Length: 147
Image 1: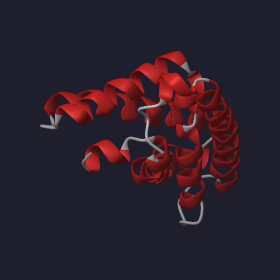
Image 2: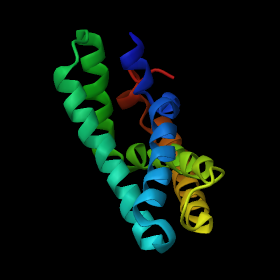
Image 3: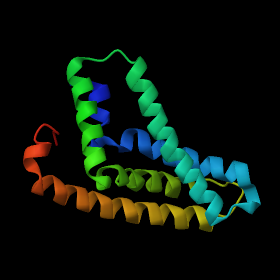
């Protein structure tokens, strides 16, 4: 499996989701400044998740990858449809990126970015735990998903 296939496995989500979380934190500060609220932050996080989803759709269509990588991506999407926790674990790394963005001096409430980052890390950690439990219970379904 090549690099593109490898970074889309859950244990390597950090490669693209951590920078996405940092970018979301910077974006929310730039867009809303001193008017940054939890509601605005949540909308920005949802936007980041939509960006990751749409970006994945576009990249899967335009990147020339091997059949084995395409199979890995198809398998990952199937797991995501069957187990919500597979998708929710992305919040762990987006939240970590939000927390990292909080140390950068930006306009807007640092407390809002920290609170949203902590909430995302917490929800993502719970989802990762649930996913790992589901993976053990459904081992035959997930055998080709390499750790």
